[in-house]
Length: 80
Image 1 (spheres, rainbow, N blue to C red):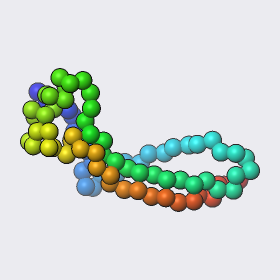
Image 2 (spheres, helix red, strand yellow):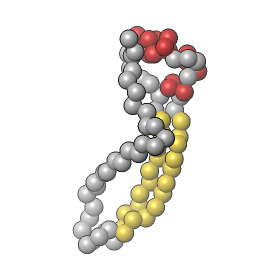
Image 3 (cartoon, one colour):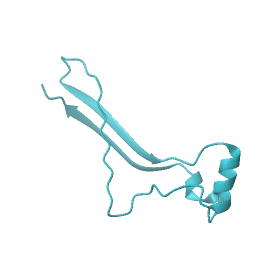
Image 4 (cartoon, one colour):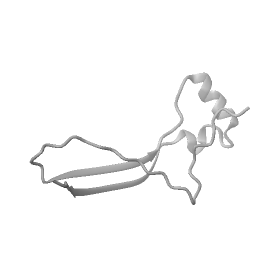
């Protein structure tokens, strides 16, 4: 029995996330900074040990490492 189910995106797959933030009515634009990171596996110790047993590289597996995959900064004009 596997501990985790596959939530990885395949190369041909795309995931879109939409976030809405309240802004002041007189604001002409908004600064946006986005950082995407693969987060390491976390949870109770017995869960982590079970994942480590199933991981090919054990604790050195990328599932246990935080990895930045993209960062973008931009100023977005707000629509009125």
